[in-house]
Amino acid sequence: MKKALLLSVVASTMIMAGGDIAPVEPVVEAPVAEASGWEFGGQGVLYYQTTDAWGNGSLFESDSSKAAAGVQLRAINKDLVGGIGAGVEMSGISDFYLYDGVVTGLVQNAGNTMDPGDADTVNSSAAFTQAYLTYGTGNTSFKLGRQLLPKALSPFAFSEGWNVFKNSFEALLVVNSDVQDTTLVGAYVTRANSSLGNLNDFTDINDDGVWMLTAANKSIEGVALTGTWYYASEFAASEDANILWADAKFGVAGLNIGLQGGVVMCDALADDGTGFGAKIGGKWDAVSASLAFSSAGEGFPIHNLGTGVKTPFYTQMIFNQNSIKQDSDTIVARVGMKALGGKFGLAYGYSDMGANAPKAVTGSVAGEGEYAELDLTYKTKVWNDSTTLFAGYVYQDDDRMSDTQNMIRLWGRYNF
Image 1 (cartoon, one colour):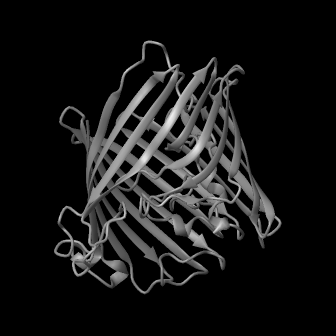
Image 2 (cartoon, rainbow, N blue to C red):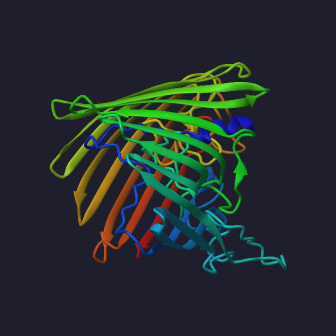
């Protein structure tokens, strides 16, 4: 279990390559005197996914499909009393009465049981996914409690946005901007839930928690540098672990370039985890394109442990995480185009996997092989930009499997 704990608390300000270089923003906004009173909001989500299960099923069959309907309500007060702010968020998930006729399970749940023959079946349930206090003084801000960790702050343990709702963490986060052009972020994280399963299931990420310190600097115009150190006592077999991760992002001749890399070190591990990546991309009117490369060593895998499934690599696609996180070299080409009121995306990735590469899916074969993935997506906003609609098709070819897999994912999010 502890091997799935350390990176669950990474809260770095690593900035991913691609797109314009964005300023590093504080995690917690310092409350202002006039910002009193509660602000309410939320979202409603419909989510559906179907696969042909590597040739063992068919698209749109109930046995090969999952779905969920969700409603998320949140309330925030930036100055509850004496400059102390508060926030709370409740996330409800239902099968929308699609179970057993249209789908055979939920893509995410809040403790729901989906068995019509079970007297304890619950079609709908809810979880408190955020509950925190905030405080700001000078150039320092604090956030304590159950909260989201954005990807820009936590490339190894971010709140993943691919599912119905994002997973969250229980942590103390401190942000300071006293040093010019530099943001310092410290964190101590104790528990987390998972983006894959029960949002009510918060578990300890390490017996003694995990500490993080990040420094992000933009002193050089057009260059963003980030360095992070993570420490977990008694990470495995009573041995402490340290992680070092660095990221650099800059522009050259109108192109955006990113470099990333780091190491997971612990004497109890058979091999340290190592990984690095690079990305170059640009935008030309309605068209964008990029090329990314990553390399993961044979040792400890580089991925979002304990809370989700994704990796921090630039080569992360919709489904390829198990093919890029360990003993693998990967290249991904992407192109995007704005058209028909939205944006089309096309991505192709290829991975050359070694003997220590993990399984593609449960029940499959691990080890050497080649993997290819094609993602075709379309995203648009409607109804005065209040609603985002997404449609995606994924084709997977893993030569360790006896067949290929096709997947279709559809979702809509209404923000209020």
